[in-house]
Length: 183
Image 1 (cartoon, rainbow, N blue to C red):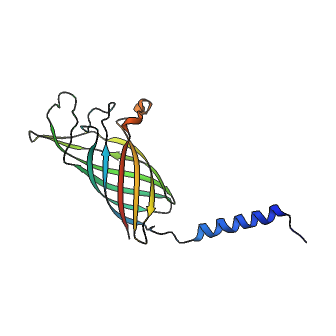
Image 2 (image 1 turned 60 degrees about the vertical axis):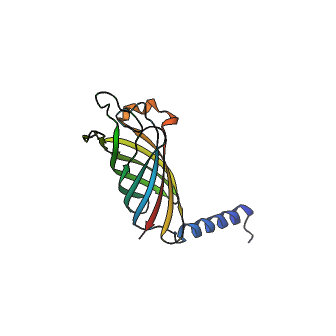
Image 3 (image 1 turned 60 degrees about the horizontal axis):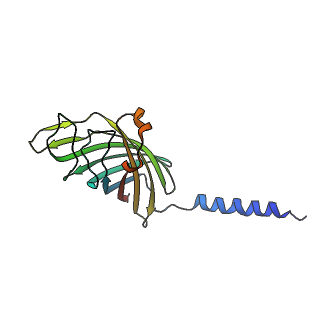
């Protein structure tokens, strides 16, 4: 009995989909250590952040991930910060340390998630303060570079509070690049 053409095509498509689904994934592991950098922009809505345009921070992170979800624990260090803060914090910023917890959803090479952050801001007078918790949303791509390495690029949007999301400004997006060692 001859099978109509549409059924042969369906079988072929199912076979290809099954082959792609069971192939071993490169650079996928439940654990990874990462080093990276982040390009900051001035945030006009969340004015407690001292970043100016083109400020750079350097980060370290540890990620534990299951098949489609992960938890990324990390910290950024910004040694040279150019932005100004609102009164009464008008001293020049010396450095910023930002610990963060990110909940990541992943699908093959795509990444997305939400993070909870706080920042320790040290000024040039030797005084420092912790900001209240704030949020970030992220979207990105993770490209395998072999068995144990991957390169991850993300776009971030920082929020002081969720009700401020209506004040979204495209120019306030931040960009990050991470080199991941998977083990």
